[in-house]
Image (cartoon, rainbow, N blue to C red):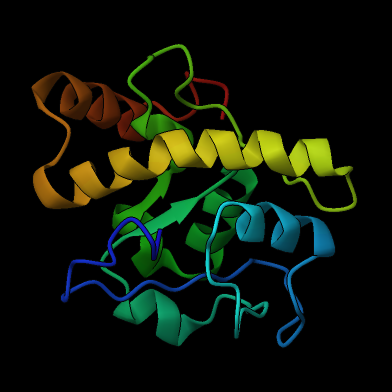
Length: 152
């Protein structure tokens, strides 16, 4: 995400997990994927979501529904600014799906997640800049109001 908005001065990007232990380096597999794609990995370390992060964030994007629910349960103020990344997909059949956590998986799993994120991150930038349009807004409003009906 930092790479995608490198030309935007107003963006501050953070990354944190709901259960991460702060201060560790990303996994060797994550570093391999990022470095082979020419991303700067210096200074990257794990963080855990905090109340201060949530308060400062305009948007929070999560990989899985369990993360969304965990954040909203712990930080109710996150409810209206937290989005499941897959919900930004152009393909409605992809919306609502978790992006798997590749932790403790082989390099192939990290590559697959990278490809998913590489496809979705431009949609995140578009959403933050412009919204995604009326059709998407209607779907997301339905999703927010009918969480149980969608099996979430």
